[in-house]
Length: 176
Image 1: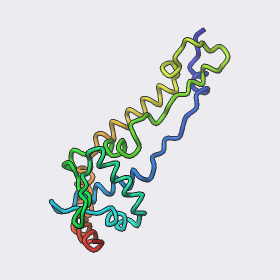
Image 2: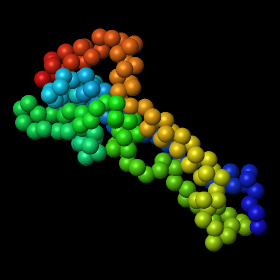
Image 3: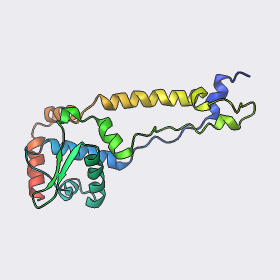
Image 4: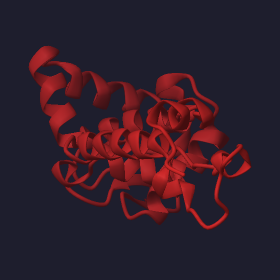
């Protein structure tokens, strides 16, 4: 039995695609660290105070970035976090993956296996048109994030608001 396209579309469910707030916090923190003077580091407390965020939760995000090789951390009184790589080599996808994980946002539950006329021998993750459409959308989303770097955003911010690097460095210094 051939399943028709409309029936397949309406029989699958679409899960929410929503990133946690930690992704936004991590991207902004990386951007701020891109403006820190070479050799300098910022503590989680400084970065959290900059945005009025809870330091323990931001620290959790920063540690995830360290594990992913995006940041380095040094302990001690002059310690803190630094970018581990050039901002032009840190993609938004790198950050999203570090915080959210690499799993697909949409995971087909093969609901079609429980419908009239379904076949038990079919892998509906591959056959379901909704799953295919969601996979294509996610690939486009991931390609877009992979093509945008912290360096790109840094450049755009500096063009739009040229005094941002100095204001950021000054504010972080006040928060020591």
